[in-house]
Image 1 (cartoon, rainbow, N blue to C red):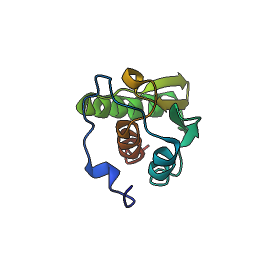
Image 2: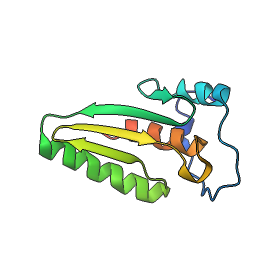
Image 3: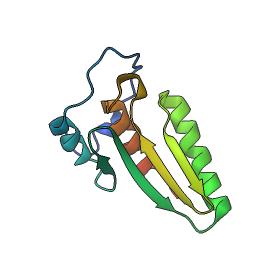
Image 4: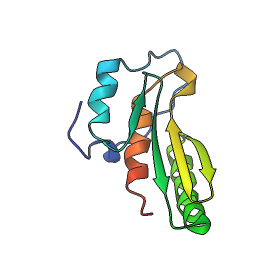
Length: 112
């Protein structure tokens, strides 16, 4: 489904539903481009991040929030002091879409 780095060149597309979620095979192919992320069933992807402290995590999360707004695709975020869990799924379709992998690839590019 593409070469490494291809995802970061794409833009998330609005998803209003009525589209089938990615198949397990499609999700696995896209996951190969974001190797630090984990696939949970065929419903979501996630990655844990660790930082030097609270303020470092906050600064990074602010950049993630700006990116999510620009892409109009918003992750579920759990923040515990210096640790952050990012989970992505496309709620409108009840599973994964290419948008989840695009945003994950772009999040990986944000310096901690």
